[in-house]
Image (cartoon, rainbow, N blue to C red; front, side):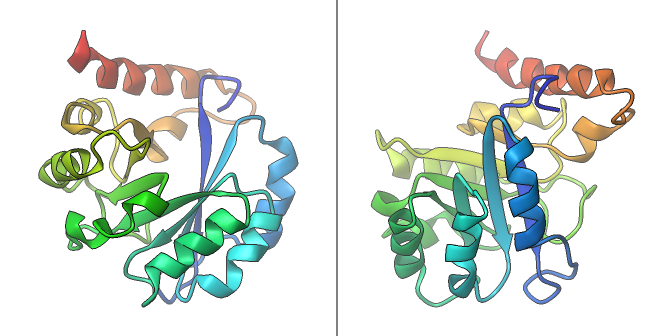
Length: 202
């Protein structure tokens, strides 16, 4: 996917506790990192997250995102991520308001707005455009990305882009129709999403 236009590689880490699914963890991230030429964007859908921050930083995370809902000390978690040399991200579940990050914006490099309930790929998009607009207003001139995760495709990409998002995570919509031996569809899918997202500003 990098060779076909992906800017970052987004890694979903799930624990079967915070979300109802289990995915890869530290060993897979550490094994994948030498093959990633761009950014390894690690999204921790785990609770507690703090005991594992150092491990994922050592595994090569460039961006390390924790959920606002995953622990009682978000400020401390973000401080720890930055102290480890990573960019710090906060993810917000659909039911969590934008205001949950109001007091940690100066410790944040990325806000990940979940547009599905986390835990499974291939879910339908939940409209969070009002939350995205609120976050964009709250951020002001701070250099903070707004990332969208869940149900991103050429239909939903313009909605979130126009609302203020500038990083779009896509899984099913990117990998559909392609394979390791036939990666061309990856590039076609990425181009379709990027073109749709950028089209709102043309």
